[in-house]
Image (cartoon, rainbow, N blue to C red; front, side):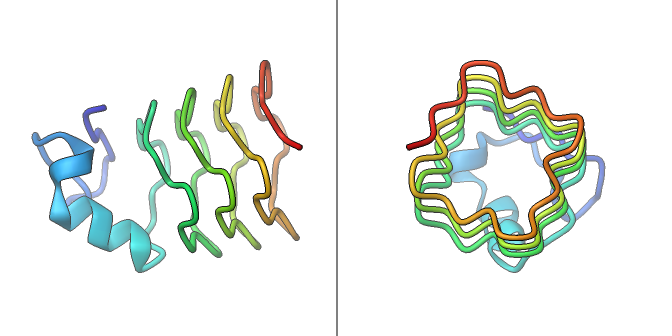
Length: 103
Protein backbone atom coordinates (compact mmCIF):
# COMPACT_ATOMS: atom_id res chain seq x y z
CA UNK A 1 0.00 0.00 0.00
CA UNK A 2 2.74 2.46 -0.89
CA UNK A 3 1.56 5.84 -2.13
CA UNK A 4 3.10 6.47 -5.52
CA UNK A 5 1.23 9.62 -6.54
CA UNK A 6 3.24 11.77 -8.94
CA UNK A 7 2.39 15.06 -7.25
CA UNK A 8 4.79 16.24 -4.52
CA UNK A 9 2.11 16.86 -1.92
CA UNK A 10 1.02 13.23 -2.14
CA UNK A 11 4.41 11.58 -2.57
CA UNK A 12 5.76 9.76 0.44
CA UNK A 13 7.72 6.66 1.27
CA UNK A 14 5.56 5.74 4.26
CA UNK A 15 2.65 3.38 4.14
CA UNK A 16 -0.38 5.35 2.93
CA UNK A 17 -2.33 4.36 6.02
CA UNK A 18 0.35 6.00 8.15
CA UNK A 19 1.03 8.99 5.94
CA UNK A 20 -0.78 11.99 7.38
CA UNK A 21 0.12 14.19 4.40
CA UNK A 22 -1.43 11.79 1.88
CA UNK A 23 -4.50 11.13 3.97
CA UNK A 24 -5.02 14.83 4.64
CA UNK A 25 -4.55 15.73 0.99
CA UNK A 26 -7.06 13.15 -0.19
CA UNK A 27 -9.58 14.26 2.40
CA UNK A 28 -9.20 17.80 1.05
CA UNK A 29 -10.10 16.50 -2.44
CA UNK A 30 -6.55 16.58 -3.70
CA UNK A 31 -5.48 15.64 -7.18
CA UNK A 32 -4.79 11.92 -6.92
CA UNK A 33 -4.39 11.04 -10.57
CA UNK A 34 -2.41 7.86 -11.18
CA UNK A 35 -2.10 7.19 -7.44
CA UNK A 36 -1.47 3.55 -6.54
CA UNK A 37 -3.88 2.98 -3.67
CA UNK A 38 -4.33 -0.80 -3.86
CA UNK A 39 -6.07 -2.28 -0.85
CA UNK A 40 -6.65 1.14 0.73
CA UNK A 41 -9.66 1.60 3.00
CA UNK A 42 -11.63 4.67 1.90
CA UNK A 43 -14.87 3.38 3.41
CA UNK A 44 -17.17 6.27 4.29
CA UNK A 45 -14.74 8.95 3.06
CA UNK A 46 -15.94 12.12 1.32
CA UNK A 47 -14.06 11.96 -1.98
CA UNK A 48 -16.36 14.27 -3.88
CA UNK A 49 -14.69 15.65 -7.00
CA UNK A 50 -11.38 13.80 -6.51
CA UNK A 51 -9.44 13.07 -9.69
CA UNK A 52 -8.61 9.37 -9.53
CA UNK A 53 -8.05 9.12 -13.31
CA UNK A 54 -5.69 6.27 -14.07
CA UNK A 55 -5.40 5.37 -10.37
CA UNK A 56 -4.98 1.79 -9.20
CA UNK A 57 -7.72 1.23 -6.64
CA UNK A 58 -7.79 -2.55 -6.97
CA UNK A 59 -8.89 -4.36 -3.82
CA UNK A 60 -9.73 -1.00 -2.19
CA UNK A 61 -12.76 -0.48 0.03
CA UNK A 62 -14.84 2.44 -1.23
CA UNK A 63 -18.04 1.25 0.41
CA UNK A 64 -20.27 4.14 1.53
CA UNK A 65 -17.73 6.63 0.08
CA UNK A 66 -19.04 9.81 -1.53
CA UNK A 67 -17.59 9.83 -5.04
CA UNK A 68 -19.99 12.44 -6.43
CA UNK A 69 -18.40 14.04 -9.49
CA UNK A 70 -15.17 12.06 -9.04
CA UNK A 71 -13.07 11.37 -12.12
CA UNK A 72 -12.24 7.65 -12.22
CA UNK A 73 -11.56 7.53 -15.98
CA UNK A 74 -9.22 4.65 -16.75
CA UNK A 75 -8.89 3.67 -13.09
CA UNK A 76 -8.36 0.07 -12.06
CA UNK A 77 -11.19 -0.90 -9.74
CA UNK A 78 -10.80 -4.67 -9.92
CA UNK A 79 -12.14 -6.41 -6.81
CA UNK A 80 -12.99 -3.04 -5.27
CA UNK A 81 -15.87 -2.74 -2.80
CA UNK A 82 -18.38 -0.07 -3.86
CA UNK A 83 -21.30 -1.14 -1.66
CA UNK A 84 -23.42 1.92 -0.86
CA UNK A 85 -21.00 4.33 -2.56
CA UNK A 86 -22.45 7.49 -4.09
CA UNK A 87 -21.38 7.66 -7.74
CA UNK A 88 -23.59 10.52 -8.97
CA UNK A 89 -21.92 12.21 -11.97
CA UNK A 90 -18.76 10.11 -11.43
CA UNK A 91 -16.79 9.38 -14.60
CA UNK A 92 -16.28 5.62 -14.81
CA UNK A 93 -15.33 5.48 -18.49
CA UNK A 94 -12.58 3.04 -19.46
CA UNK A 95 -12.42 1.60 -15.90
CA UNK A 96 -11.39 -1.94 -15.15
CA UNK A 97 -14.45 -3.11 -13.21
CA UNK A 98 -13.62 -6.81 -13.07
CA UNK A 99 -14.81 -8.33 -9.81
CA UNK A 100 -16.25 -5.07 -8.41
CA UNK A 101 -18.60 -5.65 -5.50
CA UNK A 102 -21.51 -3.20 -5.50
CA UNK A 103 -24.89 -3.78 -3.94
